[in-house]
Every structure is written in C-alpha cells, then in structure tokens.
Image (cartoon, rainbow, N blue to C red):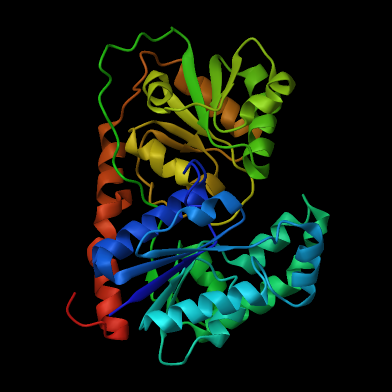
Length: 379
C-alpha cells in the first residue's frame, strides 16, 4: 500500500505561517497513521534551489506560476498552482509508484484529480473553502478576479472526485454542504505539537498589563493590528507587543509609547512567557487561526474576535474574552487591567489545548476514518 501526499505548500521554508504549519501537521499525522515508508511526498515548489532536496520518498516538481505571464495563461486554462506539464509529471509519478491512495493538501487541484485513475482513492484536506477565500481576497487584491473562475472550477471538480473530504471546522463543513452538497467525512481542526516549556528563570513583569499579538504580516493580521493600534490602544491601560514575520516593515506606522513592534524572531516562547494576555483582533478571514491554538498551548488569557476563535471550543473559559468592536475591546481589557495581579497562565486553557488541540489527539481519528471509509486494512 502506497499513498502519495501532494502539496503546493513550501514545506522547505520556515513553518511560521498557518498554511505551512497545518501542512506539516497533516504530513506528520499521515506518516504516523500509515507508516512513514508508505507515504510518498510530491511537493510543487516555486524555488529552483529546492529541486535538489530529494529523498527516497520525496519528489520535487518546479512550477513558475509566480511569473505573471504564465499565471495569466494558467488561469485562462482554468488551472491553479501549476501548468498541465507539471500536472502530467505528478500524475505519471503517482501511477509509476503504483499508489493506491492520494492525499491532496488543498481543494484547488481539481484538474489533477480528474486525471487520476479511478482505482486510486482520493483524500482532500480543505484548508479553506477556496470559493469563499478567493472572493474575500478581492476587496484587498482586485487582480485576484482572474483567479475566481479557475478556483471555483477546480474546487468543484476536487469535491466531485474526492472519496474522503476533511474540513477544518463546522463553518467550512456548512459551506461545503451549501455549495457542493457534500458533508465532510472528518472535521480536523488546527492542532499544535506541544512545545510548551516552563521558563528557566522567573519572568519579571511590569506593573501594567502586557498584551501580545503573534502572527506574520499578511492582510487579515496587518489590518487587525493596525485597527487595534489606532482604535483601541489610545484608550486602554496596557502595553502592546507585536511579534511575527515581517511586522517590522510597518513598525513606523504603529509607533506609540505603549506599542512595541518586534517583528521577526527566532523564538516566540520568551514573548509568550512575558505576556499577561494575547490579543487577536482578526476582523475577517477564512479557515482557522493557528496562533489561537498556540496561545492555548501557552495557557494564555485571550481577548479575541469571533473570527480568531472560529472553530475553537472555548465556551466556558473564564479568561477567554470575545470582543468584536473597539468598544468591546476597550471595556473588557480595561476591566481586566484593573484587577492585578494578572493570571498570565491559566491551567484550564492549557488543559483545553491538551484535550482538543494537541496534534496526537487526532491520530486515532484519522487512522479510523482511513480504515473504515476506504478500506486501507490493518495499519
């Protein structure tokens, strides 16, 4: 039994964005569930230097779809991520291996799925409902209009050909049912490996409430942090630190006495340990937010929007506060700030993480769905 794992995610780069972390998680679970020797990795990369990064169980395919000309041609041909030549190379590789199953990391590769031999069972992991994701991006990047039709066509084809569909959360499951009249076979939320460690030395805390945002600089994060800095920070008694890849690029825009923009760092742990609470002012987006799971891992009290908490079962957690307007953030944070000393580590929040969002929790679930739904047999 051989399983091909197909991903267009840059698994060779740093895993500091949500998509990469989720892809690494899925590959880990797949190897653990089926046996590492049975999983053959097909990676589509945009970096030529990655072409040499081969192992016995991994093949790398190069795509130049970042090139504007090729991207336009691809879109007109209703393809995403790579062209027909790369698609054929992947198809031939899977067939030559004699794979019985293929696990695809996205619902954007319907064209490839349609060409796969019918005897190969297909599993797709829907990191987003791509039809919604591309439409949401249009307000920020109008040039994405060219991608709307190929996205819809590929996702519809992917769902039609899939034997197993895995969704991230109930919102995506509902949209899947609405658009394509399919229910997911499994809802597999964002999870995290437990890398929590107790600080080696006692953390010295300032008297003011220390708020932390963690996330890379991409549109929903940037919009939320800038909005929070302008609309909330002038009205609360707290300090705000922003950590995440490339945020230093907009540091000057957010300069205030009680705001510190750190940006890219090698280790997030010291910043989590020094924070009293995490802020996640994400006002729009799709899927689930990986950094929410990370904050749960650190047992951090949290002030977060509904979007930031989407897919997480946090009801009843006394130190997780839902705030969706500037006034709600201001009133809730000021009320919390007035009650020092602060609870910078909540054991109940960490227990929630260990029970529901720790990656090993879902290994038996994934193994069972593979065995029962497509008859892989004893693993």
